[in-house]
Image (cartoon, rainbow, N blue to C red; front, side, top):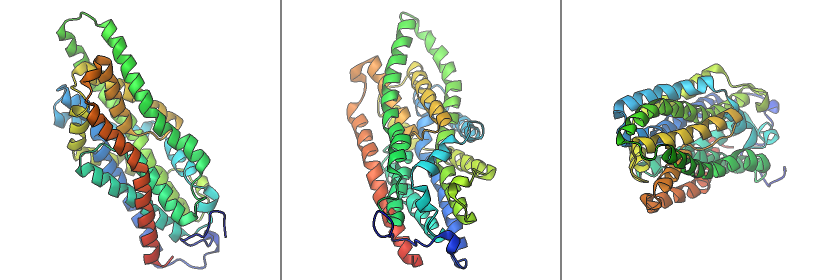
Length: 362
């Protein structure tokens, strides 16, 4: 017995398997497919945050903003590398334990983890709550990982420092950054005529493109990391030996962009209208703040939440403008959803993984 108690899912080493189980190919395809579905759901769930302030400040027609942002989201993962993907499949679970279980067990674990994350995303989308897809995926992986690998399955040290810490710190940076940047802009343009709004209306179009590209890179890479784990199990090799194939990058980028292109209007209303009233200058400041955080995170491999970063930057801008201009009750509801996401998604991921393991006889 390994540390952490009994392993519910098959603990036989992949290298010791005698023959391929008849349903392994199906589970492999389901694991890949459900991860791409998560990227799609992530697109319409979190992607709405990218265009929310631009639409609500009336700086761009909604359909045009949607098309431009979708194209930028597709291009982002292609040019900004895969550092976050390697963090996702190298820092969430214990690599040696993942390598020691069967292919079927890995596929079952991934289906459970991603299934739990998708379930939570759909529930929060129905109610228009901008929760974090990143939190949901990580929670789902932790929950399913504990079922499949035992309590020692999650790599608690790297998980806290490389994954959870960036997720927790980024909203604080978003609030402080939005507050400070808007304070500087207010000081620079004090006494300027209202026509200066046209300047910021024009500036936020390229800023929205950079925001969408940064968001696309960071969010698509999370799905890439999960698929890379599935591919490593399928090849029978250590998952740390596998690089992210080009087709995985393209598929995840496309799924995310298609998801955004389907709408995400509920999140546009929650973030763009629900926190504070937006004008072009506020939208530009929020986008500049969020883009800086997401771009830095993508390049350094830190998996952060677009929902958290954009929402917190809007809160910071609103508070800098006037403290009472922020609808703090709505902001509090968003914060509650953030805190609930990891434990609820972990419970859902564990439940789906456990049920599927019983179904396939693991």
